[in-house]
Image (tube, rainbow, N blue to C red; front, side, top):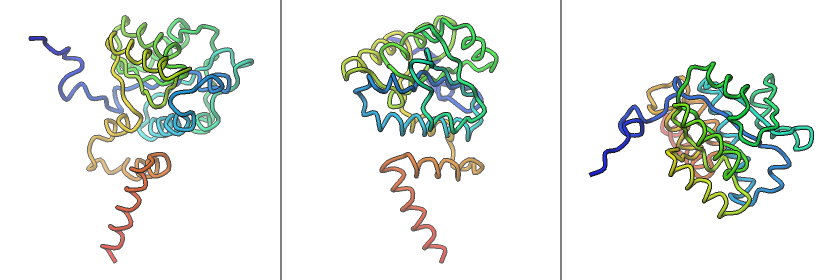
Length: 217
């Protein structure tokens, strides 16, 4: 009988704001031009949700671009969340081959590496697989990432999973960071983010708040 890797099983396998570091990779105009799956509008929405959640939970976030002078600046919705941060502009396709990014992640002292980027099959898969060898637990946010085709995206995710990367969605990341509604300090922020970017869940949450408000009247 196979024994589960204890890094990915049990309560401690869930990520927390205190042990996570987020790296957002190449959410740029040129990359969006080649994105076909998932829907680009959904990717923009989900990476914005992820960025806002990271700021809410004080999760260190590193922004990086590739050849920005030709590929375009990072998505404005993301830059607006971190207005004072200058993205690390690389020439390397594999983010983890740029020592500035590696050093920035190491400086946080966090070992749970959360990645999202364009494109899944290259710009997410390459650093995700590479960072595993450096001892990081790596989590790929698949709905805040996208590929040049459905097959490319899916093969990228599959390749990462085979290597040991854990796939998550942006909403799951928020759920793991919040974990308990008794942690009231971040509840209003989570509610605001989810109502703005959480799709049907956000709409349902707004309805629930409406009903709760009526119950108090």
